[in-house]
Structures are given as C-alpha cells and as structure tokens.
Length: 63
Image (cartoon, rainbow, N blue to C red):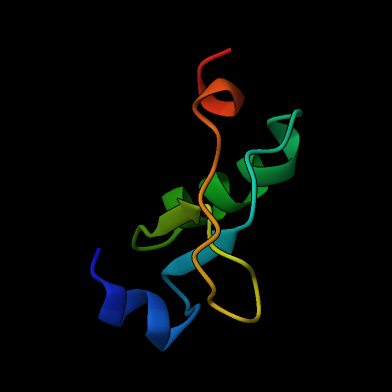
C-alpha cells in the first residue's frame, strides 16, 4: 500500500481503522465481508474520513 492509495481514501476494497480495537468483533465483520467478496485490505493507523496517518502503538498489536 502506498501513500497514494491512502490519500485516495476508502473504497469497496480498502477500509481504514484509526486503532486496533480491543475486541476483534469490531473489525472481523469487515474481514468476513472482504472474504465473501473479492478480498480487500484493512489499514490500521489511518483516521477514517480524513485519511490522516496516525500510526499505532506496537503494544496495541502485540501486547
């Protein structure tokens, strides 16, 4: 994924999440939807709506 892809914003195949949710159910609905379609990408660390890259803490992914 490139910066150009991020600036282009969300689409049918790209979903942004600002942070990694504590409960996987929050993003697993998107995973299932992508699996039932033609695939897709979830990008954590990007603000939804603004496409601003905010990053995530390593501890949030690998506690």
